[in-house]
Amino acid sequence: MDMNNYHTSVLLQEVIDNLDIKSGKKYIDATLGGGGHTREILKKGGDVLGIDVDGDAHIFVESENEKSSSLKGTLTRAVGNFERIDELAKANSYENVDGIVFDLGVSGHQFDTAERGFSFKSGPLDMRMSKALGVTAADLINGLTRNELVILFEKFGEEPFAKKIASAITGRRHIRLFHTTDDLADVIKRTVTHSGATHPATRVFQALRIAVNDEMNVLKSALPKALELLSSQGKIVVITFHSLEDRIVKRQFEEWQEKEFGKIITKKPITPTKEELQRNSRSRSAKLRVFEKK
Ligand SMILES: C[S@@+](CC[C@H](N)C(=O)[O-])C[C@H]1O[C@@H](n2cnc3c(N)ncnc32)[C@H](O)[C@@H]1O
Image (tube, rainbow, N blue to C red; front, side, top):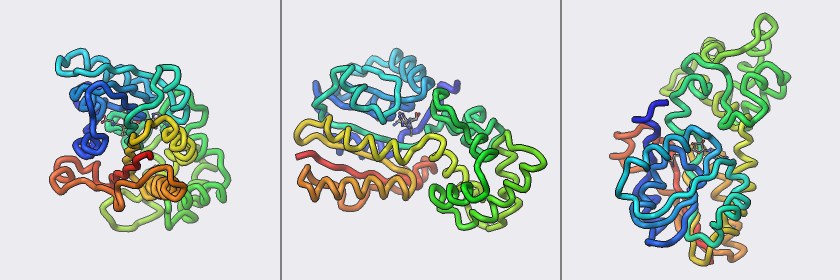
């Protein structure tokens, strides 16, 4: 595991400012990752329950925090899916918390580790955030019908060439099944020859990752549970990285506001500064939204 460059936190200062960290208060980081957001909260004396479904994140954060003497708050870690944020919080006495942060998607470590199968670098077509999940990206690519692939690429990838790509995949798998990320990326690259800054397989890879990890449903079910865990004036901060996720968060916050559960703090989402974009190109599509409970 690359311990030096696990993940560069996105919108770090913006998360901390919006959570308004106070010493002795309790916070939940639902996506611990490399622990960047968590560490800032701990430095300011807040206590944190750090959740991540991926064991690698916990190993990294534990070893990193041992080296640091500037952490005033205490960290409790819980391995698990934030879909069960209610159970994990209860089991660790983290009910009535002052703030909850979700920083969605994959960490730099997950993306850069070819064996995890998230990137175009040659690796198994896997994409599971946790090995406990049963279905891999290869299972979907080799097992879904052409029509199911079209729906998947359109729905979760907003891919304009979904039909063309699905036909190329089903044609090729008659000859040989797909096992690796670069093999799939190459077939897509040969099928869609659009020019643009992003790799032509980006949308299909996004769709597969969302499906393998059931990301949309998990997010939809976690948000109301998170609201329930907040004390009055507690805040939920969510960073999303694509429009499908952002739409779920935006709509949920609007519904809560209509029901007078609290108020939306960010009329428009907060996005990275020019300086952050230059420093970390992966922050490119990040959007941060904040809701305050009544
Ligand atoms: C973008 S990273 C978080 C980075 C972290 N905020 C930091 O500053 O280092 C997202 C993390 O969330 C985890 N994750 C994604 N979906 C999850 C889920 N449904 N439940 C728990 N963890 C999840 C991933 O394993 C990954 O480590």
